[in-house]
Length: 312
Image 1 (cartoon, rainbow, N blue to C red):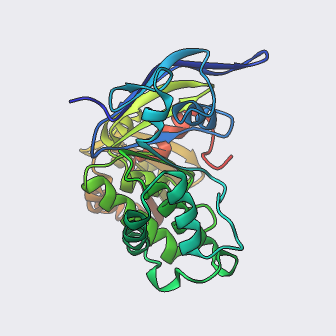
Image 2 (image 1 turned 180 degrees about the vertical axis):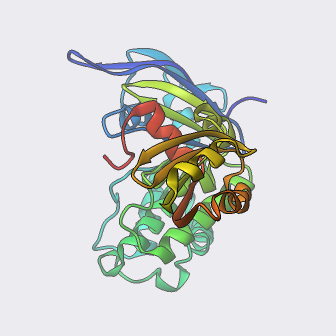
C-alpha cells in the first residue's frame, strides 16, 4: 500500500544550526501518527517542509506517491494543514471564512455551498455559521480552522497543536471529529503538548529531539523501552526494616529500594494486582500510610528519551 504521506532524509539548516537531521517516516491511509518533541526539537521545521513552506536541504516528501518538489501543486492539493495560529478573518462569519478558503481551493460555487454545510456539521458549528468569527470562543475558532482545511477533501490532515487554549467541550468535539476522519480513511499527522490526546488519537508516535527521530512505534512499543513494570511508592510506619525484608522477598516484586525514612519504592509487574500481597506482607510489622502505583506511560518514555518535560 502506498503511504499517504512519506518523507525520507529530511534535513534543514538555519545558519550554523542544524534544525532537522535525516528525519523520515510514513503514514498510511486511515492511520494517525503523532509527532512529539520538546520545544525547539524540530517539529515545526519538519511540518513546514512537509507542507512545502520550507525547502529541505536534503531529502524528499511524497503525498499519495506524488513528489512534493517535482509537482508541488498536485501534492499540496492533497494536504489539509491546520497551523498553531488561527488563520481566519475575524470580521467575516464562519460561513464566509469557509467560502473564502473554498474559493482559494478552486471549488466550484455549487459544490462549495454543499461542502461548507458538510464541514460545518462535521465541526459542530452549523448553528453558529452566520455569526462573525470575532464573536466565537477560542475553541470554536479552532474548529472552523480545522473545517477550512477539510473543504477540499484532503488525503492527509496535518494538525499542529489543534487544542491549545480551548475549553473541554471544544477539545472533545475536535478529538471526536479527528477520530471519525481517521476511521473514514484519512491519514493524520498530529502534534500536541497534551500526552493524553496523543495516546487517545495516535496509532504510532515518533519522538523527535535535537532534530532527529529518536524513537518510533506504537504506544505499547515505546512504553516497553522504559520497561513494563510498575513503580509502587509506599510510606510505612512501624517496623520499616522488618517490613522491607518481607517486601524484598515477595513474589512479583522485581526490586525494592529504601528511598527515605519510612519510604520504600518497589518495582513490580502488574502493580495494582500485587498490592493486596504487599499489604499482607507488612501487616503486623508496619502500617501502610500512603501508597501510589505509577504505571509506565508515553510521558515516561518521552522523559526517558529526551530528558525534557513535554510542556517545557
